Every structure is written in C-alpha cells, then in structure tokens.
Length: 300
Image (cartoon, rainbow, N blue to C red; front, side, top):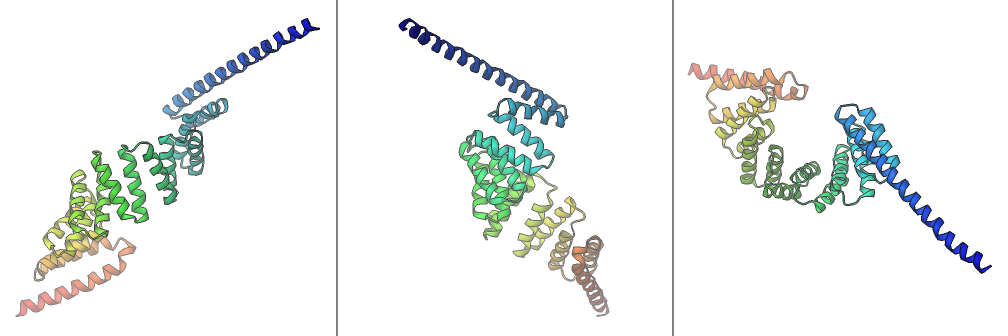
C-alpha cells in the first residue's frame, strides 16, 4: 500500500507538469495566431481593404482578448467610416485593457469631441496628457474642446503650453486670439491673430477677427486692411465686405463714389446668402442715401 501511495505521489505532479506545458503551449499558439491576424489586418488596411482588415483585427482579438493594438486599429477604421459609437467602444475597451495607453485615451477624446460630448472629451485628453505631457498635438486638441466649451482661461493655458513646447499652428493661434479677445486683452489678441496669419496668409477667420478688433478700436485703416485681406482669402465673405465698407466710409465719409462702390460690392456678394437678407436691405437703403447726399453736395 505504501508503494502504491508513492506511485500516486509521483504520478500526480507529472500530470500537473504535462498540463502546464500544454496550457503554456496553447497560449503561445494563440499569441502567434493573434500576431499573424493583426499583421494581416495591418496589410489589408494599408491596401485599403477595410472589410478584410476588420475581420483580421477581430480575429486577433478573438485569439488574444488583451491585444490592445488590435482594438485601437479596429476603432480607427470605424472612426474613418464615421461609425463613431463602434469606434468609441473599441477605444474604451483598449483603455480598460491598458489604462496607461495614451493613444487609446487620446482616441477616446477625439470621438467624444466628434459626438459633442466636450466634458468627456476634455477628461480623456487630460488623462492622455498626464501620461505624455510633451505631446503638442494633444494640447491643440484639448484647446479645441475648451473653445467649444467657451472655457477661455483654460484654452489660453493649453495653447501657451503648446507654444512653450515649440508648437502652435494657425488654428490654435486663432483660438488663442479669440480667447484673449473674450477676456478683454486686445493687445495679446492682435498678437495672436497676426501670428496665425503669418502661418497661413489666406486665413479668413483670423484676418476677419483682426479687423473686428481694429474696428472696435476705431483704427479704421488697419481694420480696412484686415478686412481686405479676409476678402482676398474668401471673396464670398460677405461679413468682411460689410465691415470693409464700414471701415472705409469711417475713414472718409465724403468719398461718396468709393463708398457707394464698396457698399454695392457688399450687396453683390451678400444677396446670394439668405443670412444676409436684412443687411442687404440696410445697405441698399444706405446706397440711396449716399447717392442723394452726393447729389446735394454737387449742387452746393
């Protein structure tokens, strides 16, 4: 009996060892299968065959449910296809699997932004930046969220941080200018708008905003120059045409011919846009008044 017991004691660990080897070998096989499916998916994605890529990424996840990159790439395809709920699900799963994956967190932020869930988007971007606070692009994207939230103090902080890291594209600088303008610092607003224009000359939004600041300061020549540049960037920009006419008439109210021409140019552009209907009516009446005033002045 003792001998039989000894045999049992020897056999039991041997069975356990064989089982461990089998499980370990199965895990290796699944991992290799997942890697192969992922690589096949990546190749299909690069070739533009998104349906095949989706199937391969799903196969990689099935073989290895912890394959974070497969979730991210699958979510990226859904994002490109504008299947935002599906994309968000994949990116959120990637974050659950790897809470310190900055790419997955940033992608959550991007989808939430598209879905206009700005609080959630800001949280995701800030979490990504907590893991990688040198990422210039993330500060830019966080600034866009703050702009939508009209959170101008935090927008200023985000873009200024972006600039200290050597970043600062024309859009970020435009948003920075708007934030300074809303906070009542026109000097810094003008500086930011000018930097935005330096990076992109045909920048209607920044040129128009710059003109508005100058117009408010009664710097009519500077305002006219900015609105003229805005019109060059977008010849159909009827608001710039309106403000250009205002600035030029403010510079020289008695330049009747020039002022009439400017207002008629605005009317020609704006009558195509239903949003400008009331402004067109006002301008048409003003042109009549200018013509009457010109005629009276010529009789004196």
